[in-house]
Each structure stands twice: as structure tokens, then as C-alpha cells.
Length: 447
Image 1 (cartoon, rainbow, N blue to C red):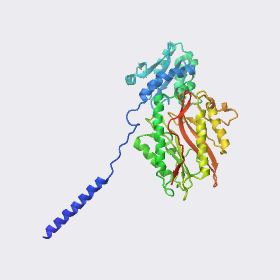
Image 2: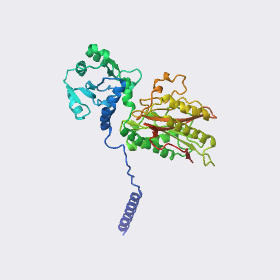
Image 3: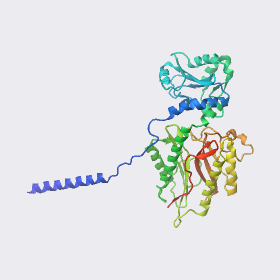
Image 4: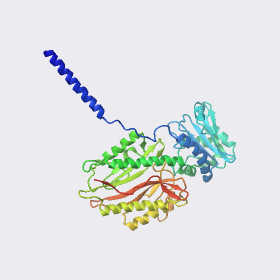
């Protein structure tokens, strides 16, 4: 009888454990599936072909270039390699884009061990295998000597690092192989500028998706804040987790992306362990890289309500309204043909009218393949001679994209300054510019 009692007791305990286990499983929420537009195959290969076919001939014409030679190699490759199909280079290869009648042709002199794979990509008109032991640079130079080029661009530049990928030894070897025709070499600075500054409609669409997620996640991050407990670093970690979930990477230095700052201005910085408190104005400067190619750069601002407050104080609301106003004025000034400094000057006049403290940053910058991309600088509006900043006197063109801020800065009682700098992204169109996504209109309020 005693044994039967213990047996029944054991069975009862097992049933209770089984029931509890089943209940836990039933109550555990399943992971909600989500659509990730950045998963799957990258659209870059097809977009690159279109860029080479449509934008490169136009860029070469505007830069006055007959031929462009990009020399690629393994481990220390040219920064432009990914744009011309040379990212998988092992041995030295020469990618030559050149005039051929009324069109532009691409001829690649490629080590024989890599030539088949490169030809399979169907990016270039002709891939010429270079036998082992032979020199792609020498063969490219021999071909150039049979042509009648007046100018040959190479990636050597004192102004643009993306147009400065040719090493000293590569240039020396190329000049020796060209002989007297080495005098035709010019910097590709203007060519690379014209080629990279314009984005195709398909690229604008991808960057629009990236900008939308960048903004949405910031709103989600603000919703996580518990005043008096959450730190700036906590909010940064939340955004890092969102990036991990979607398989995207940082638009700039990982240590400084995102920059969450609820204290005085810190400039380009990392998020600290400062505790977020009532009365704080919070800035999030955040960007993501999608398909390992295109980046976003968006800033959103919030205010932490004090006890008894249902809205921001009049002063803080004024600062925010001033920032939004400056951003709208900058957008209205962005038109084809307008020079970069003129956009900055339009906002600077507004800042003076609204009583803003001085802000050192330019109103905006090109954005695309990197956060600070190639193109006109939207700065220099206060310079006596804006031409002292060459990028500030470059004209805006249709297809350029800019990340740009609306500024208002004020002095803090405890010292230092705080700047509202709501940052949006816009694309220049034929008759003006338009935001990629809905801009921030209301200051985010945190209870």
C-alpha cells in the first residue's frame, strides 16, 4: 500500500509538471515574421551595369576625358574597384573605358586565371586574358598607343580620396609602359565626381527604403526610454539590435553610430552612459548601410517632459520650430544649377533672424555610397569668398541626394550649447528637390 501511495504521488507530480510545461509553451508568443527589403540578392550588379552604360559616358564627356584607366589588384585595391567590376581582382588588372566611335567601350586586361569569371559577369565589352608572367599594365599601354586619345584619366587626386586609388608604383609602371604618351595622363578627379555624384532612380528608391527604416527605428528607440533609468548608450544598443535583426551595417564608424545625446553638444561622438532625465532634449544621429552599398543619414529629436508638463516649454518648442523652418528653407533652395553655398546661405539668414547661436557644421552634404559622399557641399554660406571651399561652389544637379540639417543652437545654463539639427534626405529633381520620406514635423514627447 505504501508503494502504491508513492507511485500515485510520483504520477501526480509528473502530470503537474507536464501541464505546467504545456501551459508555458502555449503562452509563449511566437516570433512575428517581418518583411525585410534588404534580404536576398543585392541589386547592385544590375544597377552597376546601368550606371556604366548610362552615367559613365555622360561623366566622361563632362570631364573632357577620352579614356579612363582603373588599375585593380588584390588586398590593396582601388576604392573605385566595386564601381567598375574590379572588386575580385587578384593579380593586377587594368579596366579601360575609352571612346570608340560615338560610344564608350570597356576593355579589360585581366590575369588569365580570373578572366573567365569576369567575362561571365557581362559587365564589359571585352575581357582580354593576360597570360601568366605577362603584364596587364604593359598590354593596356600597348593598346592605348594604337588609339588616338588626347586625355587619359587615372585615379590620382589631391582633392578626392575616391579618385586617388592609383599607387605610386602602379603609376610609375604605367608611365614607363606608355612612354611619350604618359604626358596624356590627367587626374580622374572631375570624372569620378561627375560619375558618382548622380544616382539612378533605382538607387533613390533603395535609399528611400533605408531612410524610412532609419527614421522608424528612431521613433521605436524613443519609445523605450524610461526617464531617470535609461542611458544614451541603452538607446544606442536598441538601434544596434534593430540593425542586427535586419542584417544591415553601419553607415559610418560603428563606434559613433548611432550617436544618442541627451546632454550638451558633443559633435560626432559615441553614445555615453549619461542617464536621460526630465527636461532633456535628445538627439539621435543614425544611419544604416544596406546591401553593403547604400547608406542613410537621419536625425530625430525628442523632449523628456517634466512632472506636470503635457508639452515642451515654449523655448524648446521655439528651438524645434526654428530647426524645422531652416530645414524647409534649405529644401526650397535646392534646385538644379544652384551652388552649394547658396543653400547654406538661405538657412544662415533664417538662423540669424531666429537668434540662433553659431553652428560650425555645413547645412548639408551629399549622401549615397558613403555618409559624406561626392558632390556639392551645402556649406560656406558665411564665407567672404565661398570659392575658398571648392565643393561649395559646385552646382546641384538632378539625381543628386543630400542629407541636410535644420539648425538652431542655444546656450545652456550649465555651460555649453545644444543644437537642434533635424536631418532629412532629399533628391534633386528637374524642378527642385523632394524629401525621400515624410520629414519630422512634431517634437517627439517622452512622458
